[in-house]
Image (cartoon, rainbow, N blue to C red):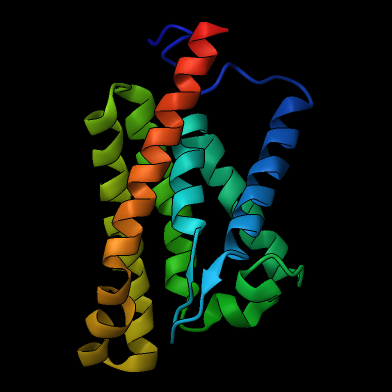
Length: 183
């Protein structure tokens, strides 16, 4: 059991849970608009947002936030990279990565919630979650590019940037926890 200071977010009740879920989905949507065009998958700040939500909200709530974001995309809201939406991006080359965001948010968020700590204790679960995103993304992407192109197209160009995004998400998570403890 974690003390309120160690818990990722204070317990949410009533209208605060839906508001937090909508707020998290909005963060995911905004982070998708910060992008560098790549093919077949654009580089966005969604990895950073996924792990920031995981670090601050815990696994279940972070996964609900990311899943809500994907549901918004599925119904056509322009929440994905470049303001796109609809089912096509969810079943196209990016589909596995997008699903990976939900799984990674849950796994990393639960790991961090159960074992809060400093930078290493925050970065390691986030890196493991990044591995899940890459795994699911590559499994899906291979259907579009073939297996030989998966690592060169779907992993290698993103590794350094994603590692930096994980470090940024971990640093912001820890800074916000310190601010909350001080308040």
